[in-house]
Amino acid sequence: MSKPLILVGAGGMGRMWLQAILEEPGAELAGIVDLDIEAAQAALEALGRPDVPTGQDAVALAEETGAEAVVNVTIPQAHHPVTATALNAGLPVLGEKPVADTLPRALSLAAAAEATGEFFMVSQSRRYNQQLYTFRDEARILGPAGMLVCEFFRAPRFGGFRDQMAHPLLLDMAIHPFDAARFVMGTEPVSVYCEEFNPSWSWYVGDAAATAIFQMESGARFVYTGSWCSPGRETSWNGQWRLTAERGSVLWDGERAPLTDSDAPVHHTQIPGAGIAGALAEFLSALSSPTSAQWHVARVGSGSLRSWKRRSGLQV
Ligand SMILES: NC(=O)c1ccc[n+]([C@@H]2O[C@H](COP(=O)([O-])OP(=O)(O)OC[C@H]3O[C@@H](n4cnc5c(N)ncnc54)[C@H](O)[C@@H]3O)[C@@H](O)[C@H]2O)c1
Image (cartoon, rainbow, N blue to C red; front, side, top):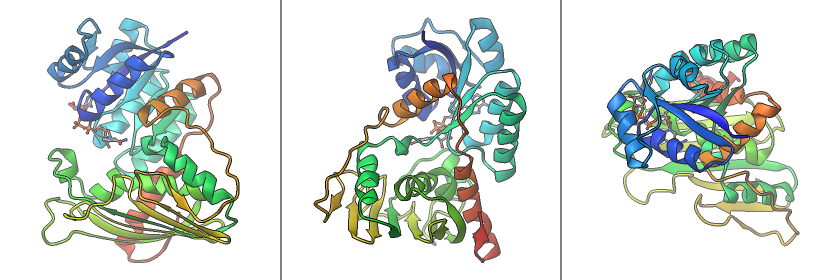
């Protein structure tokens, strides 16, 4: 039976989620919420579904339509109020990254999920990438990883909330490779040293460049260097990667098949779906057997910020 969902947020990413929900057989779009009702209606009309109910309050629309879960695709500052209200009303939530705009609010959402017993999952859509799974599968047969390096250099002109955020790169983008590094290395970070800054020509209010060194539980290091105001010779949106391990290395440019020098047979794991469709499929399957949400991602991103503010390494 398909799960009736309320989608909150009809902006650029909300429209992508709208399509993913309509294409997912296990989900049914019960309604769409936005502070800007016209944006919600326009998104529905663009997909030929003007019949779907709209509103400005997710819990009220869920009660009206009988929806059983919420997908929160609002701006980061609205993640906490929208998700906390839904959890407190007994609705499980699939939220866009970041968990929240600050670590205290992210922890407060973890507490709300625990206190209410409702499932809360944060979508890390870039995890659901067949090449990233192949990268992980190829890395696994090379023995213990020594170091994983990711470089990310792009120059997007977004306008909107990212231009105004205090930490646009770390909180809105670097969180993806931080998650991917945990996935590829199969180990969690224990400490991080990070420097964040804003190049003189940056068009962002907040710091748009950073370098972070994570020490992982295994003793390996993950090194991330990125900039969101780096015109020319841009990397892919996934960044450019090198993993060096005991018996070889893997390279991934983020958009083509990873390259390795090992001939050993690899067991290739299939993704549950691509991008947000994969996150939605995992959310729906988790609703029948909930597992713990991805809190560590929030701590890793925020840990980088606090390390930079203290100019010292930090336990995460
Ligand atoms: N996974 C990815 O690859 C990816 C890509 C882009 C954006 N995102 C994330 O998706 C989220 C949304 O980003 P976007 O680019 O769509 O932003 P956006 O600004 O285009 O749209 C946000 C929408 O949320 C609405 N909104 C704001 N506060 C609200 C509230 N309290 N209640 C209801 N609606 C509210 C706004 O009116 C707007 O329509 C962000 O968290 C962003 O980080 C993820």
